Amino acid sequence: MLIKYAALTCYALMVVGIGVIGMRQVKSFSDFLLGGRAVGPVMTAFTYGTAYFSAVIFVGFAGKVGWVYGCSGLWVAFLNAFGGVFLVWALVGPRARQASLSYQVSTMPEFLEIRYQSKFIKIFASMAIFIFFIPYSAAVFMGLSYLFRSTFGIDYITALIFMGAFTAIYLMLGGYKSMALIDVVFGMIMIIGVSVLLFFTLNKGGGFERIVFNLSRIDPRLVGFVGPPGAWSLFCLVFLTTAAPFAMPQLIQKFFAIKDDKAIQVGKYFCTFFAFLIAVVAYFAGTTTRLFLSPLNSPSAFHKGEPLFDALMPELLTQIIPDSLSIVMLLLILAASMSTLAALVLISSSCLAKDVYAGFINPKADDKTLTFLMRLFSVFFVILSVCLAYLRPVGIVAILGVSWGAIGACFLGPFIWGLYWKKTNKFAAISSMLGGLGICLGFYIAGYPSTEAGTLGMLASLLIAPLVSIFFGSSLMRNF
Image (cartoon, helix red, strand yellow):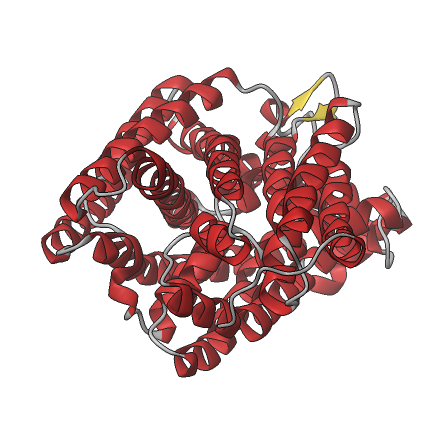
């Protein structure tokens, strides 16, 4: 246990140290938010990949998907890597960077405002980002707290308060450049961690073929092309996690900050490999929860014989990873979480500081004021996220599904069509945002699973924008 605490202390000191170094390099608001638009391909690839995958995938998502869908859950991993990474970098990355330079914008709401010449879109987009990133961040805090409880025996609330305070301190310091720098370290930790996880999963299961055979004995559908919940449920899960990155503000921001198109071409291959490795190992390990966990040997992961999905992966790690290496798993999930939290908080605080305060309240605000407000709003955002995580309203997968679905439904239509189709107009963008978000939340309130509600909202957003553009009005687009 002493070694675990020592390793955790060294990790915390390293994070804060890099944050302090980054703080000293921040000379302007652009430096704080976009790293001076000079971030290279490898650093961008790591910061994109680590922002995409957080504690959520290793704690709530992999456990539930593996238990429910079996091997067909690997479709999520494959398509996340190809669609959510490779295609985003190849199709959206160059165009998004070009648009940000032409319009001289640094945030998604700014882009949408200038693209559609609408103040309403800017304020609505800013509020949507801030509101729906809070549950996303809360889900990450929940995952971390469950892991600390299983690894150190620390009470959930104590772990939550500790992680919230540490995150707030870290995020107040360095800004995007230091975040990207430390994400390289986080990414390396994640690569080492999933390699260890894959080795011990295969070792305990007797190899890949043996694992598949034993799963088929439990239920043949667990090794089928489509798992037990069926094709529609699997499609919704894949679509939600793969299509949303095409317009997720915290991911698109990476292309606003990257230094040139050549860096995008190099980074997309590195990031795709990273995403493939992380996602495949996480979801494959999740399938083995059926083999290694039961109410008898893992009572804390079950309630009245039914699995507690948020507890499955933390319990699995204690079962298959030797105690001497459990700190590697802790650092793996901690690294994935800190990078995601940093991306979420940076974008959310920029919406309040840059888009709302400088956009509507004080347009003459200087760099020093905006940077101070970014740090202040970062702490405010973390406090709200920790409070929601304390309440634990629903499971991690449900929270993430609502957050991703709502953001995707709000931005997919106006952002993607706005980038690629000149006839997309202001009325279409507003209709797409309101319609997509309304459908997503409406289905969720009506009792539909969050993945289905999110998928329906995102599909609606993509369909509404071109239909309204065709039937109503002409484009107000500035060429870029």
